[in-house]
Amino acid sequence: MNNQDIAKKVIEALGGRENVNSVAHCATRLRVMVKDEGKINKEVIENLDKVQGAFFNSGQYQIIFGTGTVNKMYDEVVALGLPTSSKEDMKAEAAKQGNWFQRAIRTFGDVFVPIIPVIVATGLFMGLRGLMNALGMTLPDDVTIYSQILTDTAFIILPGLVVWSTFRVFGGNPAVGIVLGMMLVSGSLPNAWAVASGGEVTAMNFFGFIPVVGLQGSVLPAFIIGVVGAKFEKALRKVVPDVLDLLVTPFVTLLVMSILGLFVIGPVFHVVENYILLGTKAILGLPFGLGGFLIGGVHQLIVVSGVHHIFNLLEVQLLAADHANPFNAIITAAMTAQGAATVAVGVKTKNPKLKTLAFPAALSAFLGITEPAIFGVNLRFRKPFFLSLIAGAIGGGLASILGLAGTGNGITIILVQCCTLVTVNCSNTFLW
Image 1 (spheres, rainbow, N blue to C red):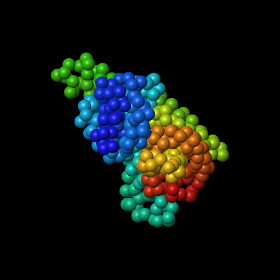
Image 2 (tube, rainbow, N blue to C red):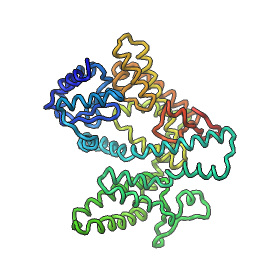
Image 3 (cartoon, one colour):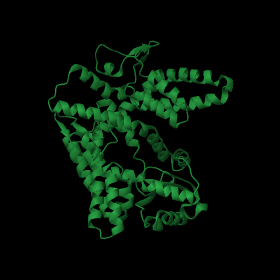
């Protein structure tokens, strides 16, 4: 069938045009908001040519076509009369669906996913510097300083990035958000890392009893400040006259939220963040690689549930604290196992359609996107999926035993070959 014929079959299997509220697409998937899930003929859709899988996630019926093909299929279904919607509009609609926990996890994803490219780039720079050090290369002082600028800046201004992104997600003015975030790491405040090192730099005592330091590297306090700040700004706009809005709203928002951020929210949630970080490290540091075995075994199950974005918060916290992310090495093993299982299905199957589906899905998994492999291949046959969970657990356990850790997050498998992985407890540096 050509693309137009496939599009007609898709619309028919979705229950017709009248059952579709809107359609959009991302890099690999056609995302459809439907009125009645019961009217969808899922078996027909999953067996259509060029369809690599289909599943419900975040209130959307997502049909996997793969890179390039999805753009063409989107054009075809729109030409046949399906109503369109931006991804942002669909996210807003999907955000109303699911329980409070699912909605909260989606919000974490919306906040942290835009920040990941910066952390990825920083991690690659850090990995490159680690590789040169491991090879015994002595860098000139000016090059060393330049490399520190490349690797440290993102973590120094991390609260600014988090508050900016949170304001954007919760409907505040992102420019106000980033200024508020940068206030939290102002050079006028004692540096948090210098205070923590126990040297001469100490916290400032405001009003004689409130210890205040900069929030360099903090994630959770910045997120909470962003949520409260965006909601406060939106509330102000409802009461401030339009003629005064440009001056009064940002002034009052910055004044009130800087006070709350530095003297209340920052200190309180910095303590909470430290406990979360200690708990995460305790799990990762379980003896005999048990932490890695557990995380590697359940990670892809969590991906199936759609709540895996919560790990973005934990990974960014680990990187900000130690410039090392052992979580990355563990989930890389889990994703590799998922992709390998898909390759095995592609090699063994005699079904031409399944063979043409399996290899692109495996490539997607090896680039860090495992949904096509999970929903399009492995979960269909169950055995490959559960075997991949076992292999992921073994690989994650081995990564923990070896003390492997990524220098960034969001980069896995093929791309991670370009990134140096450092051991957390050893002086050796590994290239994975």
